[in-house]
Every structure is written in C-alpha cells, then in structure tokens.
Image (tube, rainbow, N blue to C red):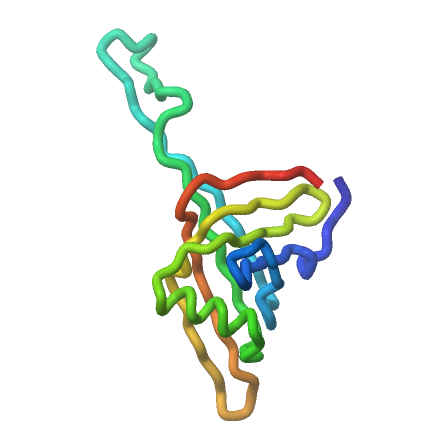
Length: 137
C-alpha cells in the first residue's frame, strides 16, 4: 500500500435513516481507533507463570474523532441533533485504499471554539454502539 492523503479519511453520517450518507462538513482532521478488552484466564497451572488470555472474549469497541471548521451545513446540524437527541444512527468511516467501516455510533462530545480573529472550529467524539461491519475497497 502506498502513502495516502489524510483528507481522504472521511466520516459520513446517515442523514435520513435510509442509508443516505453524507460527509460531515468542515472536518480537517479525522481519526478512528479500535479497541478490544482482554479476559485474563491465568491460573496456577499456566505454563511458566505466563499470563493466558481467553481468545475471542472481551468487549470490542471503536472511537471516532474529528476536528474542523464550523460551517453549519446540513451534516453539522444532523450531528448536533444526534447528540442532543441521544440517537445512535449509522456512520461510515472511509479508510482510503483499505475499506469502509460502518455501524451505529453515539456522539459523545461536541466542542465549539473560536478566536476573535479566526474561524469558528469544532471537535467531536463518537463511540460505537453496536456491531461494526468492514467492507474492503
């Protein structure tokens, strides 16, 4: 795989609940992180005293974050409303030359900021709220 352009890592939100995904406007930086908790099954019989983990157990999760310029576009408004309504709609994360991650996420934080001589900016964070799917590109 060759180097990829960061602007091609896109976060999209389902605008209508019918699978109509739109890129969240104004984002300049995006990130997705995957996590898996381990389940320790180490016992006195563990070989050499080494820790043992139970394969396939534990909780898997994903976090999405983004930061950008506030534009008050339709996708910004939808994301803001998702937060205030406590919804968990479908989101897509497009990872260039890799694939698409899709599933329900909850918007867990939105922050707005602005200096008197600059643009209004925002940051947001989301946590997975169910099983995620991956489709290779």
